[in-house]
Image (tube, rainbow, N blue to C red; front, side, top):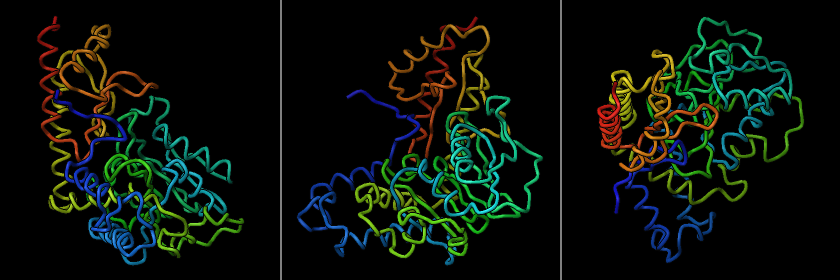
Length: 358
């Protein structure tokens, strides 16, 4: 079988250890004689998985006791609504750094008074805004830490005078995070922590129940806190794979080790983008994402875009086409993307340059 290097932006590459465990559980889940997708979510075997998954989140991120970890459905896109419904009473602020941040802002504006604090839209979201002030009268300030489409990332835990809410869909578990600096963190699993189908929420419990509006039962975070994410049937299979993925992260040595690996992979690829005369990066260097490396053909070589895409595909590169809204190329090098894959892409870029360099 042809060797394939998976750079898809999500769903994305997952560790073999987690995939193998999932295959085994589809045959026989914990000796029940049933596949994991058929077991009762009220069984002791399944409840043990929920407990283990929650414990791994708390251990790996060192989550304080006054926070709860939730496993929900609907993806991060539904959390755009959840956040505003549960937290927006008077005014909320949003940092506009890309398509997903813009969509989150749109949902909040539909619920109440939401304002844009700063934006990088005027330069096609190629950088993270700086030097802005966060008003102290906000109910919360919302950020999107990693922007998969444009390849920028907030790789630090900012000091915030109000409740800080973060969409960490595409960089969660890629580095240590000081959870205590956030009121709420959420994201879809399908970048770094599992397959599509489960959404994680880390919420400081004291911020809940403060809005005056009626909250539908399923939209109220307190429903899921009180029922341990089991108010309704949870997304069983994605949670199982998430648990196995987090066990893999722990087995490697945790998030400090994971961050070191991710930084090394990103440096390898960015160094080639900067060296290679045929390509140029699109994100400001100080804001470059270590998860999504975005680049385009350099000036004078634009006509080679389709040729390079085909060239790379022949050599096993999968998923490097840039998002349809920006074009070019995007290599998503999430946690489970091996350094071997990044090296293969770098070698491919070097080979292509030798053929076409003027």
